[in-house]
Amino acid sequence: MVVSETWRLFKSEFSELLLAVLAAGMLFTMGNVFVLATIDLDAFSTDLKREAVLEVYFEDDVQREQIDSIKTMIASSEGVVAITEKGPDDALDEMSSILGSDLTEVLGFNPLPFSLEVAFVPETHRTSALDSLSTELVKQEAVMEVHFASEWIDNLNRLNRLALVVCVVICAMILLGAAFVFASLQRHIYTKRLQVIHNLVLLGMRKAVVRTSVLLLSGITGALSSIVALAVTFVLWKLAIRYIARFPYFELSTLGLVIVVPIVVAIASSLVTYRSFHPKIKV
Amino acid sequence: MTTDRTIISVEGVSFGYQPERLVFDGFETHIDRGEGLIVYGPVGSGKTTLMNLILGRLRASSGRISVDGMTMTEMSDSDIADVRSHWGIIPEDSVLLSDRTVLDNVQTSAKLSSSSRKVRRRDIDALLRSVRLLSKRKNRPSDLSNGQRKLLQLVMAVARNPLLLLWDDPSIALDGESFDISMDTLRKLHIGGTSILVTTSEPDKFSGLGWREQKILGAEGW
Image (cartoon, rainbow over all chains, first blue to last red; front, side, top):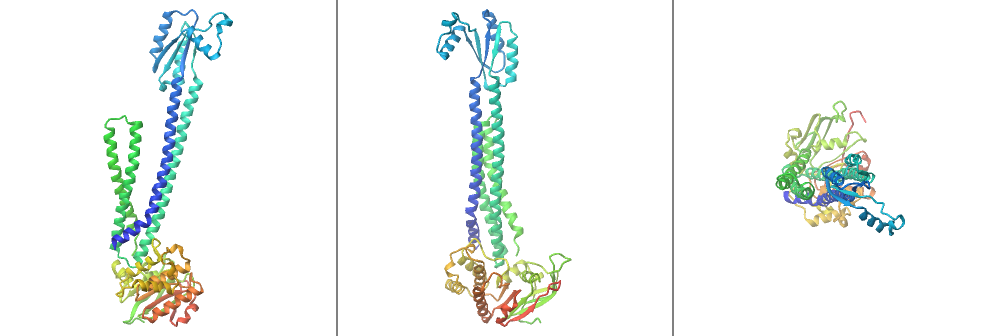
């Protein structure tokens, strides 16, 4: 009697329970897509920023010692990856390839100055830092002009911040939506189950039988919850390892979570199920 | 008057959902073995409350309700469950099990009964046929009309082979034909020796049964 009634109660709710888990799972997947898209956008803008270089143009009468002195000064700045020299001939070749004609044919001389291209690690691409370096460089005697794509970098940084805010808002909405869908379906299941239990008691089912059935049902609910919790924790663990695995004993602690979280969830959901039904069963 | 044959005795019972507002005050009635009793009164006079008090779902503010000589307030949960397992119950709210089929509902109801006579599958089919629900036996209660649900609850009660049948207002949800079918079933059950307590706000509909009638007056004198 106990087993058959428990099985009946469980079977009648399983489809709704599955629907609740799937609905929440699908919403979480959507959230995951937004997170991954934001991470990809960040990676893409980092690649773009890597292309952005600071260009230092020298006066025509610049001396080798002055260039070396400026290079030493730049190299001591934070985040500098590479300093490339570009002589007037290199610049002319580059411009000719862009314009498709030789400037010297018209002008009769090469007007392009000697320059340096400075590449930075993408994290250094804060325009304020580049601005201060640029100001320092312009003050140097042999330096004619300093260029860097400040607006472009600013816009990329702004776009990244906007994407992050949008992602956080969407994820928060999805989290709320998932919680709402799950809670609504759970409430529906709960109401239906309580009604069936009440009617069974009214028809003469013994309280002990009802108690044991509810206890078994709580156990099943706990076991299922722990499986879902294990799956969710495993996915989070994999994501965490990929993106933020930097602290010591990380694998050990997250593996601990993978074991502890499902056990805690199982116990909690079993207790909640049992405690929420047991006192409400009237004889 | 209470005798050895009395199954349920209600003596001077008062009840209110709020202490200062009684639904009824000092109500008295009884039902003997094999007796049919119709308790009638207008809406709000306390018919459903009386039913719930007899079922042990509510506790009287004062007075005494006894079942087979035992006072309900002194009975344990187990005793009340034991008593109810001998009864057929059709409360105002549904007693149907929404998670199972029509046939399963009747079988579960019969299985939970303490009746010594066990109902067989063909008896259940015959009962379902008598209320024209045999073709719906594999359906869920949610597939039935309100009237059919009431008839199903009647079959569930009858399948328990009850000593006492309690039906809270059969006239609700039953149309002419369904009502006639249910009255016919009640009549047969009564002839078979089952005590029956029916509450209603339309006593005229039950006058053909020839049972004892008692008016319930709400505390505000409806």
